[in-house]
Amino acid sequence: MSVRPPRDPVALEALRRWAVLLDSAFRIPGTRIRFGLDPILGLIPGLGDMTAPVFAGVILLQAIHMRLPMIVQLRMILNAGFDMLIGLVPILGNIADIGWKANMRNLALLERHARPGEPARRGDYVFVFVCLGILGVIAITPVILLVWLLTRFSLV
Image 1 (cartoon, one colour):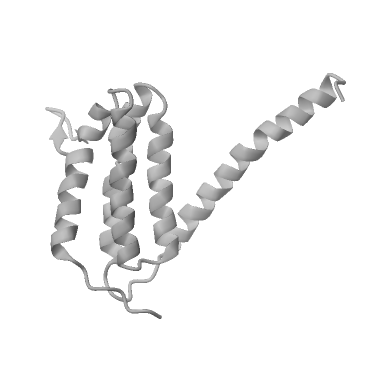
Image 2 (cartoon, rainbow, N blue to C red; image 1 turned 30 degrees about the vertical axis):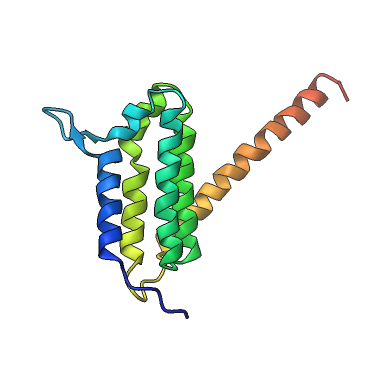
């Protein structure tokens, strides 16, 4: 097993500050709901769609540099991908961003697995395989629907 490079506290602190700024810098008064700039920037066409993937890429590059397990890196990609997917829905995507907080999730994964010898957890594998299963169902459903419609209406 390869030895991971040591944690870079300066880099991790910078990533933590950015993740907080994007996901949980502000609190709605009278509630426990926190949000950051990500859902606000998401209201600006084009700009919001670019900030989340760029920062997700920065966290992922740090994970690669620290040689985190591939399954953890895949989980980080899925977190960011889900964030981008829900962000495609106007307004509703911005509201969902408040709850999902992909940057904070990925930072937590990075910090948890940055310790030397920290193996991937069972939950990481379960999350990835469930996501892949859902993606598979999403990919195959239109094909099944098309075949059913073609045979149902005798178009084949």
